[in-house]
Length: 424
Image 1 (cartoon, rainbow, N blue to C red):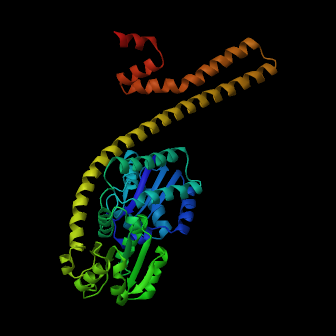
Image 2: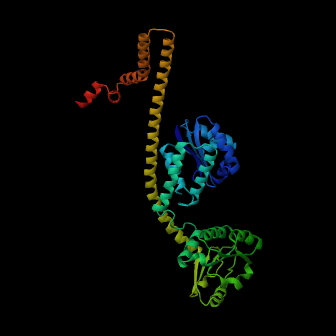
């Protein structure tokens, strides 16, 4: 059996094609059932996210052509279009790839942690569908262990590489006990949603959302258990917040120097941390002139993100070395299992031949044939049966004039001529 990885991701295909080959939770169940019926497929896992669709399959088809055809048939797409925008990896390269994916090394944002949970979910779905046997169980459990080691033994996830995450990490550095701080989110778009998600992960409980449209703010606030008010109410509530993070589509600043100065006086000069993620700016740059106000813009955060990205790239090199070693360990285990399987098959074949010949001998004895003749015939047939395959292999080695192979086989079969020749 060959381990194959067939995939399409953000590096190889545009979003229009990635959308077409993605699997919904409902279609995933159908897809796994369909793969199960595919001739030669023993195990399979389908990883499907917004940036990738990948099939991991233990199969007799080492070319990947059957998988390509299956994927195109399942989604009713042209097979050439998929072939031109995909990749097929086999054996150790496939092992390295799934480990890189689970560790966040192949993600759009280097080192992002969500992908590990998505791969775990894909494995769970495949196991529930009966598509996991011992080999894939070993592979994916080993992969999850490697991904955890990558995160604990390198700095791949230690530094922020998105402005939303950088804003929250910066707030965490300024305020030691971030969960106890009050946060005002100005706006309710995608960037603020990401900020809110990171704040929630950090355990922040006191949150409020201010937006021009109350309905949009309420939809976001519902997931955060946050208060809601309009942009016009920001001046009267500003004093209640330690952290203000803003990202709207306003063409003019919403928070001015005077508004912040008044809020600071009402706070008795307790510091305020403000982050402006908007372009054009939501917060007047003059706010930075106030002694107890700490204002960071999107440009400030971009510098942090760039520096952190460089740090992650260095960490990624360390992670690649770890994955290289661990993929090698898995392949060593896999090869050892194959040798165990060969020994098992060889013994089963020998015992089956023995049982067949013994049964025939018993039948002859029951018919009254001479016992000595039956024993001689049984011994002759058993010897021939057990030696037949080995004799053919020895002849094949001799015909190919391969002394090394002949010597190895002779030693393996404990033939004295070869053993003594080797000791000369």
